[in-house]
Length: 436
Image 1 (cartoon, rainbow, N blue to C red):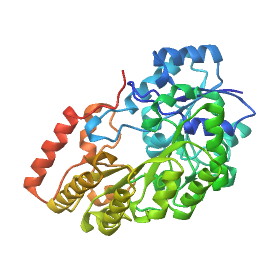
Image 2 (cartoon, helix red, strand yellow):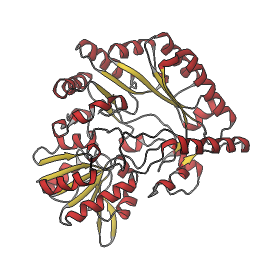
Image 3 (tube, rainbow, N blue to C red):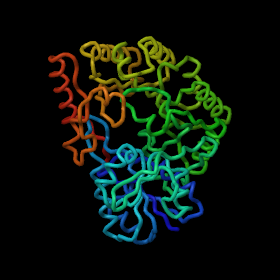
Image 4 (tube, rainbow, N blue to C red):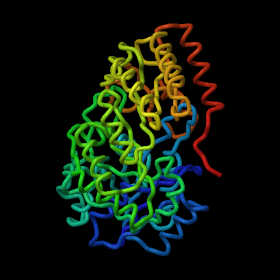
């Protein structure tokens, strides 16, 4: 069967992200004729997509919606609107091609997207490593879990899919992707690699646990290094981004990966999301020796109350300890993100974040690569959304509906005014993640 896998067009020129999810999915359907197309690396995205369809003549088109929007208050842009448009364009070519959808963005709003996008015949909920091959084998929905489908009576779901175990995770079909197009943007996390799936953190605003599950499924460090080595030697990749929700948890797993990279003599740069609570001096040294050139931290609050409300593992003590460790490793670079507003807090949350960032700037200087005061993008089925108890349409169709999805309220009326000014200044004058 001819299957064309498409990464959804974002709607503007951004630093591209290689279609990791689609390349992984392709590795599980090798008995079919598969192609991967990313319109975001084409000068004419829609035209190139339609030409690919005309030339390949697929029987099934799978389109991945990775994100609904940027989730950045200072760069509000709606990807879902353009997802809908590319679906209409695809359908206009032929109404006989079966269109399926999936991806993280789809899995957050499966019923809503099926309702809003009648072009989709079947949707794959959460991981499709096992459910998509099963669907192809059985020639239909049958007993396959993890599928949204429609009939004359409405839209239905077959239940949550079975999740793949770490030992069954396959190396992505990067042979179907022109990785040369993404290599110039590796500093923007353009080429991802996953050493594990699942997240055991309990951040009140985050969707990782619902998308990847709270059971950790970890690849063996030896397998991780052999696959990264293949990326470098076969495809010329010089830097990867570990897209694990938290790379350094469990700490032993991360440390072993670092040791294996160094032992293999693998010269490659990498970066990852880190949790400050699990940072140690030994780990920072191991990671830097193994090629880590930036440590990303998102503690989100620097006061006890804010950390508790957000369900963070971080503590004020772990934050300050991590900053000291980074300071004394003279080549270590780090970035920190905080939320200007946390529900149920006031001045203390904001001022403690500003104080920490000033301290970090003084101690690290230029080695503080990024520092942000951002706002929580409210997401479905999160603890935070349930506690706010407000009805909000979390799936707007256009950019103008995005502002209301960011939480910028505090317990102080005066601070609320300042936060509102800060929010809109960022919205109007913030740096856009676009390329020319």
